[in-house]
Length: 97
Image (cartoon, rainbow, N blue to C red):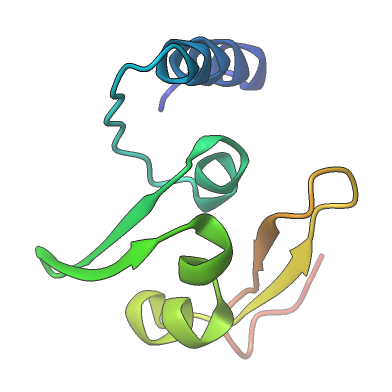
């Protein structure tokens, strides 16, 4: 979603409200943290095929994401919403500025 942070949340909160009224919303997101914040269900694709399907708490786990994204990451729980938040890490050998 090529929007600044305010409009990302505005757009997804409207989609979430629409879904809460009994409608179906399908969104394709590459931002796993926005996915975790707004999705009721996550379909994770790997090389064009369905890899995992379930609630964000089930799908957005290190054991699921690490083999697909092939990068190191830390996953912690959001302090207010009890959902996973993913922090990617630089490739080995890259120093932090």
